[in-house]
Amino acid sequence: MGKTFDGVDARMAEWLGEQRMFFVATAPLDGQGHVNLSPKGLESFALLGPRTAAYLDLTGSGAETIAHLRENGRITLMFCAFEGPPKIVRLYGRGRVVEPQDGEFAALRAKFETPTLARSIIVIELERVADSCGYGVPLMNFVAERTQLTDWVERKGPAGVRTYQLEHNQTSLDRLPALRWPEQHSS
Image (cartoon, rainbow, N blue to C red):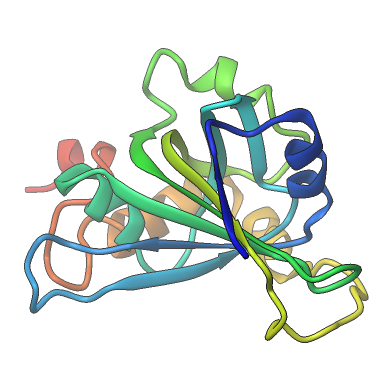
């Protein structure tokens, strides 16, 4: 039977930190818009307090989460135990996007050990924390982190990644505005 919690306590924080991946779900207000569900890994999650979480938003082919958060702020993170006892934890909340040009970015970025270049940091004020059984989640063994994204970032370099973001991360699939910094470079 699932439970709800006032926030993330030390025991849950430890469990969350042991998970190798999590999922992020957001949606636009328009019922015809695309719901987004993205897997995240590479040690990109951090708890900032019992009711505040954050994760590194790494450059990808789309910017759906950023666009949805800019529009309405709704976000859910889901963690599943793929190893050990079955368990699912969902973190529901209101998120905001912190981009590299924002004053708080450097202090937030220091909370993460992964060296990968981040296009933003998503900060979530948790409104609901809940767990459930996870009996339907398969047991799987972790082999290794994939290196393709970090290798791509290294090959491109910061300027090349920024060019990619300018070309691919300005808007969502539904044409909602995403990253703010490319707006300054648009004609």
